[in-house]
Length: 367
Image (tube, rainbow, N blue to C red; front, side, top):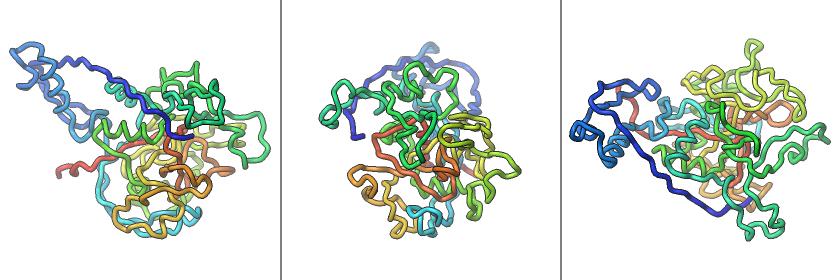
């Protein structure tokens, strides 16, 4: 795919703020919200829209407009990368400063609030520009996204187009295409998110996307290097601890881990830092450009990635790093749930196994 025309819709939000009520604790965000202030109690009645909006903004701390619970990750040093993959080698020492990270992947419910507040339209929902697709018939240029579609049989695993299909109308609202919806799936990770979409949400929430060094440091949870982020056994104690693929890929998902496809966030135990689903479920965008050779020249302190991208498999496309694997990773085809491994994605492309989470540079919590 190539970049598409950018379309934004504006949306207005009407806010009603209660007055003369005692302070209450917002346990979800871990903060106190005052419902009795000079800004809202104008003439002891309903506040003006300006006052209500000001109070709404003031009530949000570093958590941002999405009100997502975040975990503070103390900075430190770790061994980054994996010798099991050429583009994740060599393993090298990296130090990162402390940062806040969303405890789980951004959900459909969170993304819905963002869209309602801003009128944002994702890349997968926007019209395609015929100039960018000169060899494609005009009637085929319809908005959509890539959907994993299990075939009845496959001829080897070398051609991924056997199980990926471009579905017209597939987007975050309709993850499997027309006829599907996110109703009842509010706590699943939002998917069909291109890099631009993730960056726009992060900006709205007052956050940013993580560097891949931050992401890996958080995923390791302060533990010494192991084969997987949770340890050296794929199934510790005989149990699956992440949403990945079991069975005969790609034709038969045995769902031994309890889920075919996406799992609601927090379906598995958190890591030592209190972060959920750092492996499996959905791939997560990182801020870094992708280059397979970057680790040979990476900075040791808060690396930000290379200044541009290059993928010898598709040299003309701009790509960013993705981390963590997804519900489709498996021992037969994609083992990118192995600790230190990397993924990559063209910035305007999305799929039903691609999402994100955010980080923040706000000060650490007071002792």
